[in-house]
Amino acid sequence: FPGDMYSQDAAADEPEWVKTEREQFVEFRDKNRDGKMDKEETKDWILPSDYDHAEAEARHLVYESDQDKDGKLSREEIVAKHDLFVGSQATDFGEALVRHDE
Image (tube, rainbow, N blue to C red):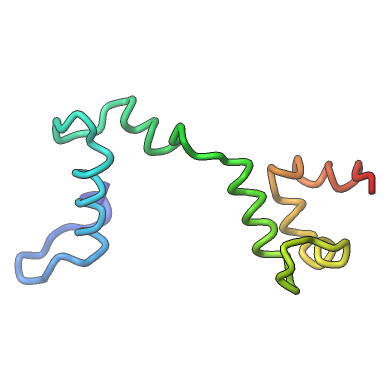
C-alpha cells in the first residue's frame, strides 16, 4: 500500500515511514516470501490471532479516563469521559453503563 500513498521521486530520499513499512512487509507480513500478501496474510495483518481486542479496548478506556492515575476508574472519571465510553464497543456502546450494578 505505500505505493498508493507515495510515488518515488528520483531526486528525493525515501521517507522514513516508507522504509519502515517496507521492512514490516518483508519481516512480518509476507510470511511466504512471495512478494505479495495473500488472503491469509492480509487477514492476519488486519485481525492478528494473538491480539486481544477486548483487553486493548479496556486498557485504552482506563488510560484515557483515569485522571488520578490510580489504576481504577471512579464514577466521576467515567462521567467526565462519558463520550469515550458511549463510543466504545467494550461498553456495548454505552449500554453497559445503564446496567451497571455497584
